[in-house]
Length: 121
Image (cartoon, rainbow, N blue to C red):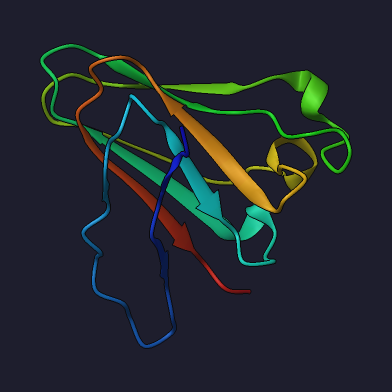
């Protein structure tokens, strides 16, 4: 089944309203279309409304182009109920897929939101 697309929000010098995010879909997982920009320009945020901690996994990319994909996936534990975790500083060399996307897998019963925010250079 196709992964659920995460809407990308773009920050600017004049400000940007916080977007609504994309509803978590642990059945189909998620994909972020980077639009030709490097992963280094993105922040990923995860909120969890489930009563237990849940894990969001940023999946290692395809080699090539992700020459450092051998370092593996990145698991982010999002605390229960009102958990809110943000990650940045990721490397294209580890996480980019050969189609220019990033894949995000969610643990079963993950409930909440997934955000992808691009910070232009």
